[in-house]
Image (tube, rainbow, N blue to C red; front, side, top):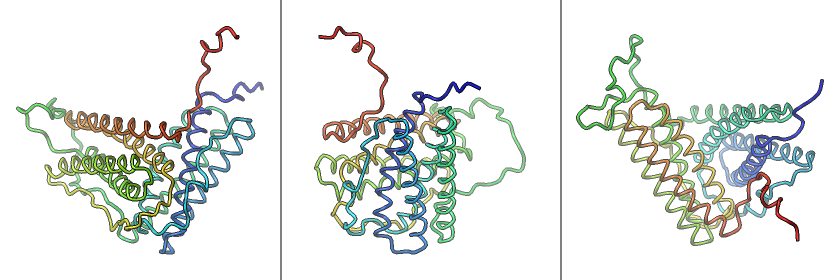
Length: 337
């Protein structure tokens, strides 16, 4: 039988390139976490996460070499300082692993759905399985310690119902009272509170350890935006007397000695903002109340503007690697000198 899918398509190229950068960054962060973690049970989960990220990175590297494709520069030991003092509490590290596991499951699932080559599908399936196992381990330990940010509890309905009034979708008409939130909407509001809390604490740590002033100022701006978005989501829940999920005992130390390079911190923030925009898009599409969908669109626009200012900083400092591009046919067709 003839194999018609031996070459890389744009999907294989783009996903392999993106996943290599992500795992390279994650391996650096988790390596530093291993140097500073004190709790042995949390250390075991972080070690599992580090093994997954570093193994993924090496397996991706093998694919690049096999295909004779240029390897991204990504990140290395030059982007971490393992002698830097403790910056994050152990409870934050564990919740960070959980949140990165959630991002990983979404990213690997989307990448798997995009590619067609058998060996790449097998590779991404393995990545996804590792991430699910990591997600389970982090969730189990957080629950065991009473640190898991549980979603709000709601009343279980006594029967199934149909929507019988178009006002169910209203939310922006001041003459029509807004209905109470449904459980789907509460779930997305709660999840976006959680992700922004992790992002806000990361930006706090990054702002106090950044070397360049422009990076420090950017991280402070990102921190303020995350705080503002959290307040927006909390206020929506409280209007329906729903208690917002609260973070556990996370803390950032007073150290200002950078464990990570400015390049790595800017890339990390870029990845988190991109994930947040994706979360908002999912929440907007799942929310039936029009005011919620509009609110998510507004917050997505704010996040996109922040991402653009961050990208400008990365380009200015030559920290942003150019993604693989299609051939410029116009340039290739120019008459050679």
